Length: 279
Image (cartoon, rainbow, N blue to C red; front, top):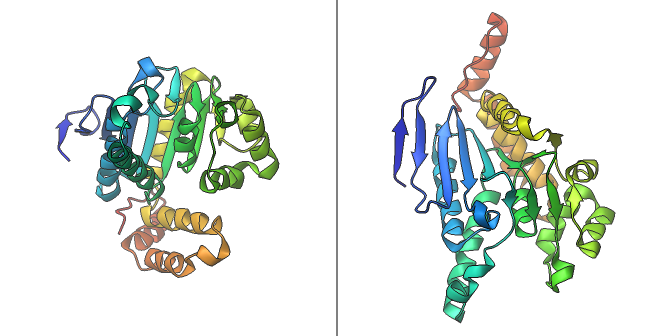
C-alpha cells in the first residue's frame, strides 16, 4: 500500500492510500486510525470501503509503527450504520457480483478479527446492525453518550447466523442477547454499558481525547505482553475443543525470552518509564 508522511510537531504522521476517499487511515504516535468516511449515509459501508478495510488492516498488522488500532466514523452522527444498500443493484445484481462482494466483506471482517494488535472502536451516534457487528470485532468499545445500538434483523425478516450471535452473547449474556434480537429496538449508550456491550461511556466532547489517552496508554506497554493477553482471552471465549492453548503458551514464553522483558526489569530498577521495542 502506498503511504505518505507529513511532519508533525511531535512526530511524523503516515497517511495511507486506501484506494477510496470513503475510508481514511493514518498512523500517529504508535496508533493506527481508520475512519469510515461516508457521513452523508451515516457511514454505511460500500464495496470500496470493504476492500479498504482489509487493505488497511494488512498494513497495520505488519507495520512496526502501529501498536494499537482505533476505528471511528466521520461526521459525528454515526459510527457505522450497516452496509450501503443503495449500491446493491449495481454491485450485487448477479451471482458473480454477489460472490465477489461477499469475498470482499469476508476479507474485511477477517482482517478485523485476526488483527493481533489491540483494536478499539470509538463510537458516536448510530452503531446499528452491520455497524454493531463491526464494533463487536474490536477488543474495546468506547462510546459517546449519544451512542445508539441495536440489531433490527427481526424488523426486516433477516436471519442472523450463529457466529454473530455467539460473539454478542459472549459479551452481554444469553438473556440480553435475546432481548436485543427479539425486540430489534435501539439501546442507549447507558443501557449498552449496563449490559456489558461497551467498555465505557464518555461525554461527546471528551470522546476523542479519552480514546487517544487510552490508545497511548496501551501503545506504551510491552507489545508482546499485550499480544499474548489478547490471544489468551480470544481463545478463552472459544468452545473448548477449538482452543489453541499451545499457541498462547508460546506467546507467553516469547515474552519472557524478549528484550522487552529485560527492559521492563531494568526500567523498574532505575525508576524510569520503559521503552519497549516489541522484541
